[in-house]
Amino acid sequence: MHVTAYAVTAMIGALLALQVGLNAMMRSYVGSAVVAALINFLVGSVALAAAAFATRAPWPSTTELGGIPWWVWLAGLGGASYVAASAVVGPLIGGAAFVALVVTGQMICSMTLDHFGVLGFPERSIDLPRIAGAVLMVVGVILLTRR
Image (cartoon, rainbow, N blue to C red):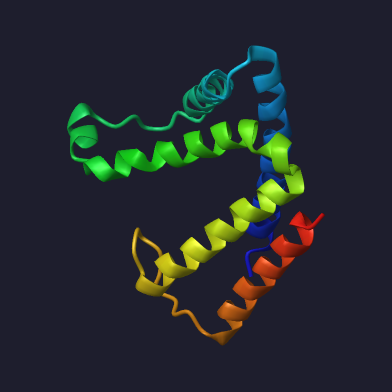
């Protein structure tokens, strides 16, 4: 069991919940979800650049970058969509509902990716316990979003 990996992942989840509120606040200050998302990514990019330099991470060559399939570059759109949506939708539905819906969407999509073993994920068939987990997530979303 990967207890440390699970703990770190849970902490990242907590940070993402905080990020929803912070992105919404940034939007209220700058007046635009897109500008708030851009600021988020600029701050994140500076932090990642500092971490890359501090850890002496190897930089890819232009040839290596050119060998990356075009569709792999689309990964950044997921993060941009999350950040922009959190600034707009988070204040409308609340942090718990926003995160629950995001996680449920991620989980259902991830189960599908696992089932087919695509994008580098190990193949893991959708079975009854996994379906039960998905159903429980959906029930959790319903409970969190009810008024």
